[in-house]
Length: 345
Image (cartoon, rainbow, N blue to C red; front, side, top):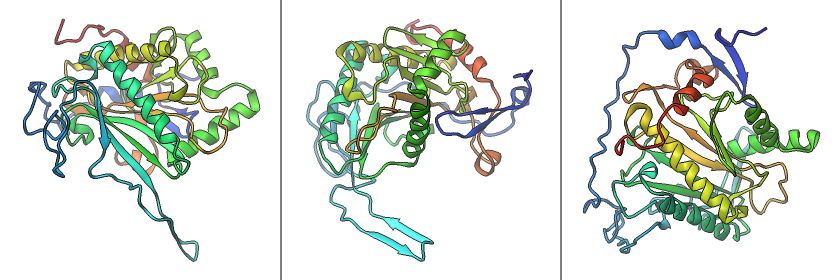
C-alpha cells in the first residue's frame, strides 16, 4: 500500500504529466527570497490609472465613464486581427506559422480598489455575463479557433495594472494546453462514453477529501494532481462544453463560487491572494467536441505566507513539477477559512 506521506508521483489526468509530491519537505527552514507584501490600501478612483473611468489610457484613448464592467481591445495586444497568413519551414527544423487574434481587457468594476472577493455577487455576475457575451460574439468569427478567458491577480503574477481586471485572448489556432487537454479528454470519452471530468468529479464527491465548495451547479476543489501549493479547479456539475451554454442559474452559481473561493484565498494569509486563473473550454469553429467539460483553473504562487512563494525552478524546469504540501492538506487549509472576508470580519 502506497504511503502518501512519503515522496510519490501523482498523475495529472488532464495533461498526462507526473507531479512529484514531497510532503516531508514542508518542514525545511526557509532562508530564501521573501516578497514585498502588496498593500491593499488603494483609493476607489486613481486619476493616474489607465483603467479607471474617464481616464486616458497609454495610447491616448479615453475610457468612458462606465458604471459596471467595461471591455475594450487591448492597446498592446500580443496577437493582432490584421496579421496576414503565412508559414516558414527550413528543412523541417526551423518552423513558424502566422498567428491571428484579438486580445481584450475586461475591468471588473469602475472601483480601483475592489477585487473579485470584495465584490458582491450581483457585481460578479455582471462579469460572468460579460465573459459569456464576449465568448459568443468572438466565436462568430469563423477564423477564431479558441477563446481564452483569464485573470492575472497581483503584481507577483505579473499584473501590470492594480485596477482589478481580466483578459480574453482569441486566436486562430489552439494553444498547447488546449491541444493536450483535448487529446486526453477525447481518449477517455471515446473509451468510456462519459467525460473525463464528470467521472473524476463523481469520485471526488464520493471521497470528500479535497472538496472546498459544493453547490447546485459547481464544485471547487484542490485537484489530486495539484502542482501549485493552493491550486484549485472549479468544475461544472453539468457536462457542458463552454460558457456560452450556461443557464442564468449556472451563471449566478458561478458568481457565488468565485466570490466564496477567492474570499477563502484572501483569508489564508490575510492578504489580497495573488493567482493566475482562467477557464478551459472547448475550441470553437473546429467541429463538435463532446469530450470537452468546462472547468476553471486557479494557480496561486504563495506557499508559507503572504511573502513566501513557490518557485518553479531547477527540477521543475528541468525534470517536472514538484510540490511539498499535499493537496489534501491544502484543501483542509482552504476549507477551514471563513467565507467572510478578513477586512469585514
